[in-house]
Image 1 (cartoon, rainbow, N blue to C red):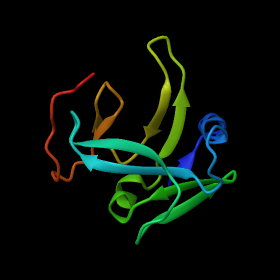
Image 2 (cartoon, rainbow, N blue to C red):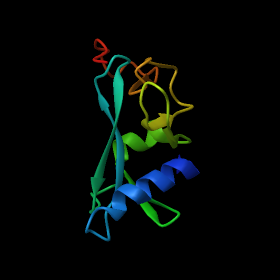
Image 3 (cartoon, rainbow, N blue to C red):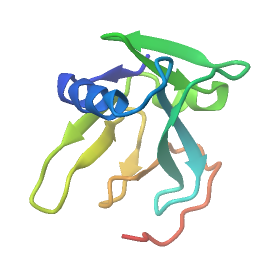
Image 4 (tube, one colour):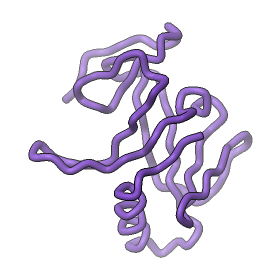
Amino acid sequence: MLTMSNEAAVQLKKILSDEDEPDLGLRVFVAGGGCSGYQYQMVLENETRDGDQIIDQDGLKVYVDQFSVKYLEGAEIDFVNSLMGGGFTIHNPNAVSTCSCGQSADFGDGAATARACGH
């Protein structure tokens, strides 16, 4: 399923340590839109939804909804630092193409419509 790099785990632990909710985890999902057809989304959340897969890695909870599971199978959440900025990103072997903004991907299923890149 979905994995997380060591650097991403360290950064997420830093973010979660600032919150006062012990059950808080990271929800990762794909939604239609973005410049390649789908965009990756990540939010902090403390509860599961029907059909969620819960991944526990290094004591961190990652929630993935039933729709997104097939698109995120084998993907890795990473954290990168660069001169142009840094943050969480997803390396996804299921994407047939990605946008230079790094926030969206095309999975080749024709289910979403690409939009202009907002970056």
